[in-house]
Length: 124
Image (cartoon, rainbow, N blue to C red; front, top):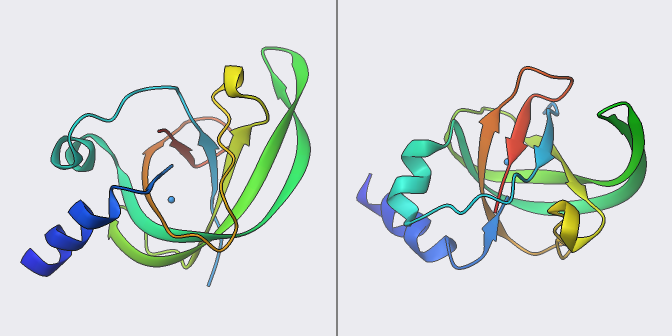
């Protein structure tokens, strides 16, 4: 348990937004606070690596908007998921809370479950 806690503290320096896949919406432009608070405030916490990215169109408030869809390999799940891959949907521009994840770079992800078409909402 202490080893996992220590790994989370180290990994938080590269924050994310985390067999089968689930979808996620990234981000609400919400601050996380200290790592221990972010852990307890999130329903899903994981360490993952983005494998690929594609641009898609989704409906938002009745309009089509461009988003980037990242597929993450989950290296370690701390809370709320047993998936080996997750899909993270994020904005394209900084003003829409988009985040330009670097492929093949490790991130610590914090996510919230949603009631819409996507299973998770991740935030920075």
